[in-house]
Image (cartoon, rainbow, N blue to C red):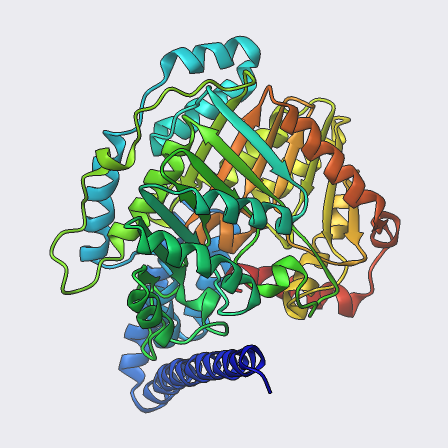
Length: 528
């Protein structure tokens, strides 16, 4: 066996060890959390049996909690499952809600985010001139841009070139070539990073950058990557000169922040070039492995002024996830904002934005709803999951009823069978209103996009599900007056041509058992 073959075998064995250890950690943590939940349920039942007075007090507290949940500024779909659980299991339900349902976070963590966001806001331009020009182009799109700026401070930009990638491998290879040219810094943030073949293509140029003195940082979510990497991954990256952090580490103890994950996907090079989209850095996203048939995804490359928002979005999460030994989490953000003369080739409007569950403003959902409500000819979506609340359902159905051509493309092969069942439970009401549903038969469609009337398109990380719309840290990008809008439309239509129209199948009546099953799934869908 030659040296290269030996090294490959060694890396394969090490990778298997990483995955095995990660899965073991996830299973052990899951078992520990499950035991805690069972203990809480058992305590609730036993206390009720033994002490009648305590039972009365518990139900009184449960009633107050249910009232508090009902009064919260959330959709009814988000409130209903918790109200049912708390009513059935007062002690366990209340404890579970406080731990993973309230999205309250810890006082220290919320303080960090607040301070960082306030500092970042100082480095985001208002761009009133660009907003006025967008108003002249489209008042409806400008209205959405104004809403985003009001609640996140992210403005509308011009002087930015956009490239669309219908194939994530093309985006990934372009990303690597741009990283090789880095002079000052490279930021990499993904929900899932797999220590496998795809990442190893990226690792080499990152290491070379670090050797040249480039500030290289990697940031990933622990749940998203837990089956792909071990905790040793951080140490290995640090030993190579790459700064590495993990968002919201999995703990065997229920905690207030467990339910909130970093679902963002961002790469920034020198503050001049940025990438985002639906793909993570793992083999299946590039069809290196095919656990669910073919994988469909997409991404965009930005070059110019709008990259500033992606840079600051990364630095928000990096700073908020500081290590305990580090005292400071606010950096000199000015040094990551380059001063250079860039002249864009087209007159596009670009609005990169980020959503956070800590803002208590369902921004991601409201942006999608606004896009649907502004449509007058057509509105197309691609999404891996379709699990939405009444407000989004109403917007989609009403648009179809008023004559808008509403189409939604979902996967033909699921990655999670239970979630797939929940997704399909929404089809009947949608198709009755005139929405067309397509399932991409080659495999799993992971792309998250929307296009409206050839005017505006959205591309990013935001699924049409409760996790993305309420619980996760997400990022997206609105694009208008660009050739990319047409390219996104062409790609969606190409994806539709490879899909099966299942609208007629789900238009017919359902059996009573199926209705009951879907009703139960829908009620508890926000907890998935």
